[in-house]
Length: 108
Image (cartoon, rainbow, N blue to C red):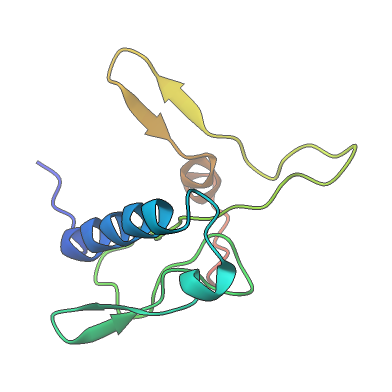
């Protein structure tokens, strides 16, 4: 059984995004996303202003926290593509495949 040591933070992040989506009718101002999330008295950034995919330094596990992305550049393939596994009902992030291929964008 996999255990995510950052589960409570991820859950709080999802709840925050849902609340913001309801408040701003699905168009959430970036300024709201840049506000830190507080879980058990610790601050966590929801987004990294310089990268769509990020792993907060306070995370205990290896996984990233990602709630935003950027559109692919015109006439260029996306840097990664997500896939959906219909049998398990899970989404496999293209970023996961990038990491398993040996690329480490965080320098860790």
